[in-house]
Length: 435
Length: 166
Image 1 (tube, one colour):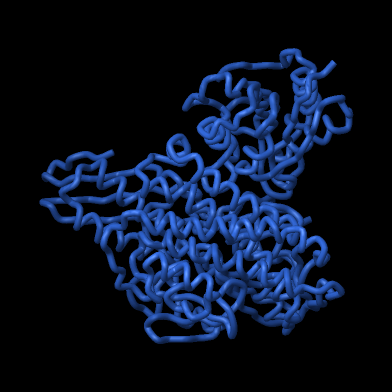
Image 2 (cartoon, rainbow over the protein chains, first blue to last red):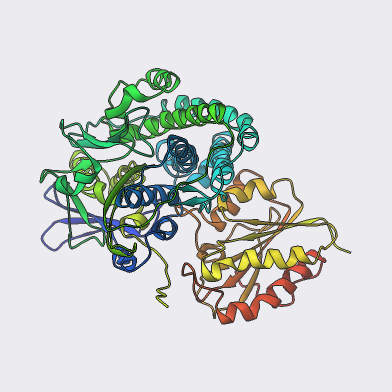
């Protein structure tokens, strides 16, 4: 909706954003053809989640924090595991790291397939949503559902459940899937890889507004491979730092219009986490097949057009299918599912790449493992300032558009980030039971 | 004599009353009704594959429509019926992930022509969906009625507790 101000200005207001997780809205003020206030408003109440974790046992955060988000529980589980294992001075063996990566592939498949096909593609194909799009493009939507189903199958095989995995514990897993169980997934993964390649071809034909983001990109970069379940922090500003130095570089602050904290990098302007940042900082780490798919889609080795994030997500889909098949083919039975993580006093840091960007956890423990302090920095709160900056850029460029069209384009710009407002506010339904 | 049918319990096992669909499915499965297949499921986007090709399906889910906790709501939503109204209680469930919940699954399946000929949604109004909590007393008390409603539906009768308001 929009309305005129008494001073001749105009307010463009979308009360509730569609096709994003959680409750948020946007607010743009325009006066004399100039854009004034631009706000991504996040209404979901903060759940004071970190406060809730204080006093809990060191073994609990992987299970509890997974409930913050229905689409990226694995990200919460593994960022928590890394931070708590770091605090306890434990480093898990490579095999456990590899199985974590495989489970994380399942989450990326679920999340990217859902976002590309059911949430984002309607913006480019000119539909209000996936249901309307499905009437004209049933084969496209069916492909999206098929892709998501493979993600569910992988999550179920490794994590024990398709939505909130129950097989993850501090130090590893309760049980390792067998070679036989994993091999049975291979036909579905091969079909998924073909569907992912077809997805890249489809989205590369979309019409993209001409836009280049000037912001700094930030992602993880591991010693090997594309960043998913581990890595140190790198940025396009040339800085690189260990995850334990995250708070020395990233500062969070409140803004009046959002219940989620905003983040700054080294005191500077907006920075971006997520697919564009990962891709731009780690193109060399993609598999040859994913690199080839990106090139055939017309992407270079960097991508700074936020609307093309849909192509990058599709390329990442190709990568995680490729990677899941690689891991399954190399897997051998007989690996111990976990290592002991005895409590000790200390502080630990962990970060992984959730589908929508870097998710950072920090915990401080006392000698018996009681959590003294916890901190969670989710990707959407890091991206809020850049989302608002994009909206401003677009509103200024398209100020002559009708309110309806401008609203639609700005909403689409927000969806470029696949924002998860539930994560941004650490939304969580929890019963406080200290008995 | 029951007709071949599929009963799907939708929900989260550790989300308080959000587990009511799963618990209902478990109870119905325990009855071993002939011709009735029962599944428990968490992800609304997976519903379309589950019920695709089925003539008759019943989905039980937790809803938050503003009714009294424990209220049982029953609605026809199959290919032979009308699209769900904007104000339908079926649009007020927990919503699944990224705003894709039960109602979205129904309407997406309708667009893809993958709805069962007859689909009945059974909603149970929740009191709490807090993680780690047990079923609330009103929902626990309603469980027998929910199971009875599902059994009646698959037996070819109308659900006796039906509140067919859309």
